[in-house]
Image (cartoon, rainbow, N blue to C red; front, side):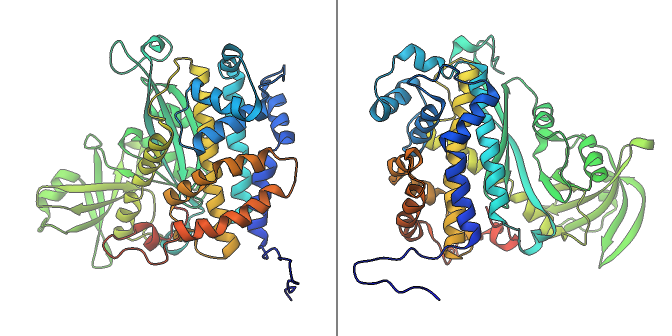
Length: 444
């Protein structure tokens, strides 16, 4: 039974276990004790004078929350206002070292792992058959020309960095990212980021990752892959689903199969079994196609069987891939991560991982608010949650920097009503179909 509040007193609203766990993990993993563990593990900031690892982290988080560009001048101004004077050169050196990049990356990975484990979110609807759906894509970051030797760009005489990041539709979190020069290929970067597939997880890629070995490895490890079909891939049609029955086809090429097809008018849906490769390297896959016109058919190659997703659901699921592009846009527009103000590769990594850490903090506050109020997480618009967190930016950092163990929890109690009033969308607009709601991608 809930306790009644006596006159002049207020009672703290009851919080379910998952929401309390998420709030606790956020406060714990951004605490001086855990930061010191990460600092020692990565060898970062050994002198620990004015610009300590904990203070530097809070500075980067606050800069992202208030929407400032991550330049050294901006970061130093925020640091001086909060912690006191610091010289420019020593402050910049806190970022221009390999251990700084390793520190912020470790902090990001540890925070994501703890929030994912404590939140206990699950996909719903057609996607509930998967443990998670992860979208991967690359984005380019402009770098000052003086960095062209270490970070060569695809444009001669310029410098650029490439990031490959993974986004989860179950939690709405940017879970992992890796960095290289802009000239690096996306597939080797992704393999560095994801050493092996995770069972029952659906991986969605664009054509930059198109490789037959990815499909074969996913099948061997019990995972699934979905991407568009590249025109250069020579697949042979061995089966066709028609009127609910799978009819055999004699290994025709896709072009010959289409020439024998009676109808290719707009709206025609194809659901085929295909073989890609020869001999021991041959992989049997599923090919779904949709005719946008009599001459334009868009093809989707996947390992997902028909009992898990129908052909229309495969197409709709691939359309969710654009959510990672919206994520990149959100990061670039709100922290200007499309360009770097330093050419030092270690500083670029450290600052970008720090911004990603702050973004995960905002998305985790969204998860905590949804769990606390027992509402579907998809009702809280991610960008609106970022705007609310921006209004409370100083309060959030004050609570994290406080020695009190209840300061952060008290802030969440005060902040949640505003977040619900601004970010909650109980009835989505009828003018735009939310594919993520239909498919059950709760975090999207």
